[in-house]
Amino acid sequence: MLLEIEHHLKFSYEQFIRESHLEVRVEPRSQSGQILHDFRLTLGPNARITRFEDWMGNAVHWFSITDYHNRIELLVQSIVDTLTDQVKPLECMDPIPSEPAPLPLYDFTLCSGPIIHSDALLQLQSELGLSNAPSIGECVRMLGDGLASKFEYQKNVTRFDSTTDDFLKQRGGVCQDFAHLSLGLLRTTGIPCRYVSGYLHVDTQDIEPSQSHAWIELWSPANGWMSFDPTHNRQPDEQYVIVGYGRSYNDVPPNQGIYSGAAAERLDAKVITRPATSREHPQLDEDSMHIDLPVYREPPEREGAAELTAGEAAASQQQQQ
Image (tube, rainbow, N blue to C red; front, side):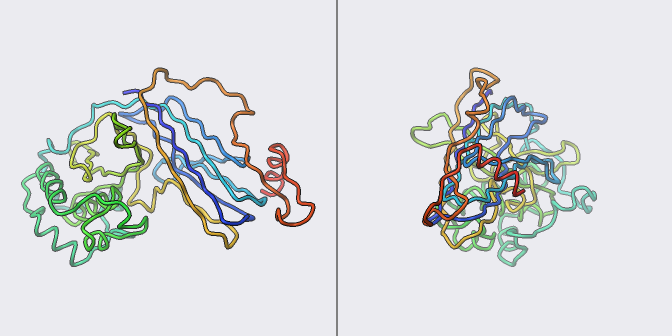
């Protein structure tokens, strides 16, 4: 399925701030089962963007804005081809591992960060009977059905830094919470698994908008990595687009950074997906590759403070980096 994705990120501040240092993980991966054909990141105010890959091979874009500003906007545009030739975890007949995982998988067997190895987690694992499953596939089925019967998808009841214990207490949360709890349950059962961040395309966007999404992949000795979406209790298909892998959300947040100033920050995010008709965006010139937002060398409330042009802002950023 050929998909076009637009991801809008808008940061606003109550007052002008001096410095922002921000990194984003919004570039879809190109790998087996998924091909990234085109990617554009448009930023305002104008700044130099550096791209690198983290320890999991996820693309990271980093930039700094060191003049006074009160807004940052990013428009991310991607065209991705998704395929459906992945192994389905429910079809996996491998038995639950009885030996420790190979060293390269060690990080994906630990409960750490927001995934807490608590009595509450162990009690739920026992209630679901995961350790008694005859195969990995049956374990995943029991996991999905169990979470669907005990937990509800609810917005605004957990936070980005909520833990599995928070989710177990609330009995409601979002995709990130379902993914973290699934990782904890499977790792406690002995199955290596990892967090996946990305996008989920829906056909009825007038009713349910497309969204950033999170799901999991689990490891089978015979089949390798297999994907499962515990939020919807289903196996991902060509409507899913992978951006990054990690041990948990902490490894692959869409955005993270710091800024200098006492102003409160507000983030507005919006995702739009649609079937694409071409593998390339129309050619853009350099002048259209930034969003025109003002920056100032001095605090704007000071007398004589002048707005910098896009060219002046870019030169100022280069001098200060």
